[in-house]
Amino acid sequence: MTINRKSFLLGGLAVPAAAFLAACGSDSTPASAPADVASNDGATATTQEITVEHAFGTTTIPAGASRFTAIAWGNHDVALALDVMPAGLSRQEWGVADGSGMLEWTKQKVDELVAAGAAEPALFDDTDGYDFEAIAETAPDVILAAYSGLSQEEYDTLTKIAPTIAYPGVPWGTKWREMIRLDSQAMGMSEQGEALVTDLEQQIADAVGQHPQIAGKSAAFFYLSESDTSTIGFYTTADPRTAFMTDLGMTIPASVQTVSDADPEIFYTDVSSENADQVADVDVMIMYGEESDLAALQADPLVGTIPAIKNGAVAFVGNGTPLSASTNPGPLSIPWGIKDYVALIAAAADKADAARA
Image (cartoon, rainbow, N blue to C red; front, side, top):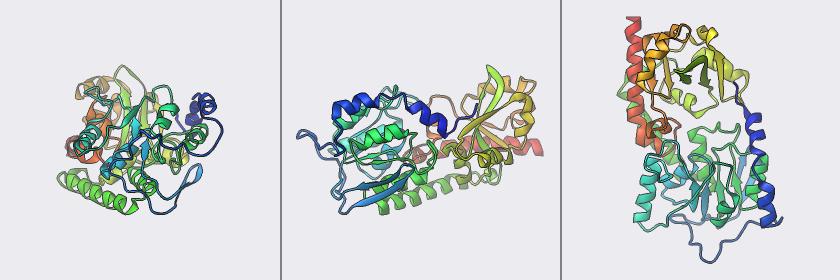
């Protein structure tokens, strides 16, 4: 199974945008804030017109924007990391342990800003597509979606509500630095966004510095099921999870890099387990699941021949846990989980070294 840009765009066409547009009328003027909507918390109004380039063209944001709504994954964390409370954000379920609709690091920052006087953000349920009416009700000046998989139709609908920042290249392929830079630019906070990137890079370097054994090892983010080992899935370098391996000082295996280069719009693919030797060049596998899954994988006559599996050089990050969600890096998830994440990878790297000894 290969997932690419086209698959996402076609999938997005199912969203009932027409009904929403009918309700809002065809006027392309952004909705104005209702009188009972408070101004955005923590934000300073932009002082000049801002233009942002992305996959759907150029978005122009008039001066005076101060109210930001974020959708999809992680964009709200950019605003929060800059001490700005979004007017609304997409509800999260996967990786959320307390039913709050917010990942642990998001909830911590929201609670901090609420304690300082900010209003609680609205939460949007994106399960069956974007809730355009709910997004419009937050009366945003700008919609942040630099990391998303918006279709053209979804983007066009959102721009009826407010200027919208989409991904720069491939759907769901925005890396964490790009997400911070694009979203902060749209907020008129490019300088603060750049400082945030620098701070996060130092935090990553500090965590990696505690585990020098991972330097130079080849690694990628994989998907394997102990109940169905007929295929071996992996995320390409278009996906932030595998791309993050280079931030850790690791290398991308030639097997994964070749697939990534052949079609840069693919972010996930798989190979038949009968061709397990195709990923024999991987030193360390990172994947969802538990350590208890390893025995079943090692016992499989095909998957068990992969050196990383045979050596136990697998970093299992859980499945649906906060740590597993943090492997998709963002400005708040990195500080929250980087030490534990790198420690897991380092333990797997130790097993790769032991097998070579």
